[in-house]
View 1 (cartoon, rainbow, N blue to C red):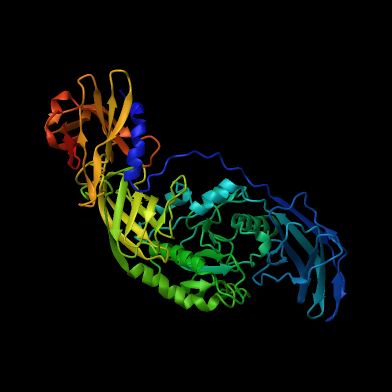
View 2: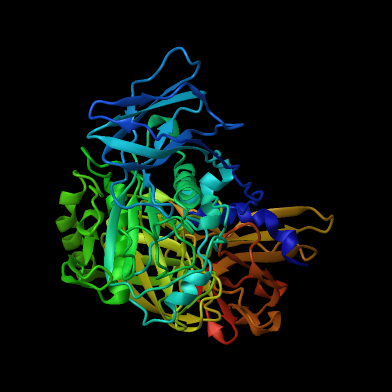
Length: 613
């Protein structure tokens, strides 16, 4: 008799155990197709103060535009010029002239001034530009860049929203070379997950690293309706423009945050890699950009919360005072430790006139995040014992302000973030992993202890959507057996079922619990062992059992009698749930109320009650 004979009993357990989801497999991600083309114009004409050069109609030189058309420009000119662009789907009706605003920072690797990106509707087929002299100027060259970043595949978008992978990448390895900080790194979408053609490692140049002393905040272009919420495509468009138009080795920013608060890994190479974002004096900095042109409106709250989290993580890791000032060695300027791009030596309005005034408040909030910690107590979700927890077991954590709302994990795999709340496990080997979440609420979180957590004392760090932290410690053991109870309190009757196999081979599943309306709880149902020809088995459910050394190391007693343990391990199709299959001998008949005891590798689980006739 093995576990496959008992799969029907899983239905009963599913009713009793909250938020255990069936496992499903998804196909591999497809990579988006990116196109990049440019046109060049040599403009050696002298322009007076009012002089204007208008181009002929230019067909969009791309084979396919999806999900939007990103257009940028780069030029060399003596004197100030204004570049505008308009677009059309049929070369008859045209949009208004749109300014190709200069980035206002510094020339790219070719000595050109670069613009921001315009995002145009995917139906765009023609564009036209005009160049006007603000003062007398000479335009030596002009490039118009066309980018189709490719629509992000559905499965990739789902993974991004779940912030799925948390793997031991180069970034994690580099973090381990430094003293660990108590503020956890928030979930970050990897370059592979957002569809970077280079994957995790850049192929465009060697990597350089720095000791980060200053955290620099940026903004980008405004995401128009043409983007249709495909944030990963926006990140790919920026990467493409930086690499192929600016001539940089990689995207300039270390991290990119979209307006929903999702954080994307920017430049490859991991923690402390030098980017290209601070007016040519990038040493000592980490650059974080929020997608949006915040000239007249501030970033959304979700984006600001994520910004504070990533800044708090880095400030804590490097011992940076978020509210302090210090000398920035590369620029020889005294800067706020959290600064805007405009605080550097370049001429730029970044991060925008509506964003920049928020920086003092952001500094204060980040400092508050590092100073104000709550506590969280974590126990087995089955027995509510805090003695020890095992890898891949189901855990319940209790505290205050753990989440802003009640949410249940409904995706497969389980999400690592719900309502903006994350749970980070820092084990005795000083390795951090995100836990997958079944359920979050202000007072309780149910999560799955990650696989491979090292034995010994571990820290549990809960970060809510605003970046507030609650932390506590637990002991991680190879096994920590706990049995689920029908009343979800670790006591009384087990969450289990009886399987009866009659002499003719008929199989019947029977409950071991019945709900008593008067007591408002489950009480033991009588288990009738029936005819001597019946074979009767108990199928019980728990967690923390699968790490057992062997089946022989699992023992069970009912009413003091030793039972045959037929199976003890993973309950197929459920996250963290373990299954124990036992044969009920005829000698138990007439025992009435008895204790059900389980021991695994010498460790006892919580004792529960059965009624046998």
